[in-house]
Length: 186
Image 1: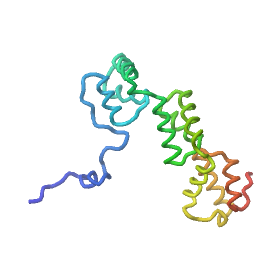
Image 2: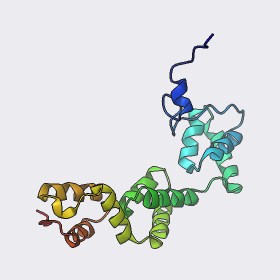
Image 3: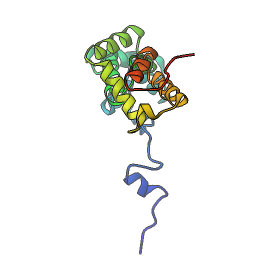
């Protein structure tokens, strides 16, 4: 006899389907906010703001959360600058984002502005932004030639790269070097 399976069980085994998404997490069954915070941080790097939000959503009151945050910082399990640097590396190296978009993403984690700026500056000091722009352009073109694009196509490519955080003047200069037709901005 074949045992019936719940909907989506095969998809979950393959890593797809109605399983937990990256932001949803299994409930943390614990009595104190510190332990819950450790469990959350054991799964992935989180900023202080993210830990606060997740602990509050689990029903801990503000004083419990404050005490847990102090303890987590004391043992360096919680470090916003480390989180900001890791996020900046991910955005630049893996997702091929420019400086502006990377800064925006790091700020969205709830990291203090000075920590976000310092992390992005440190990461981009080690990154060749021209090579990063070239990689992003190559990915965007998907093997097509820049010279084969019409003016509207060049505009779409440039707009996409601006949304990825690259400076328009650098994008246009790169497109001109690759033979793009008429890259003047109206």
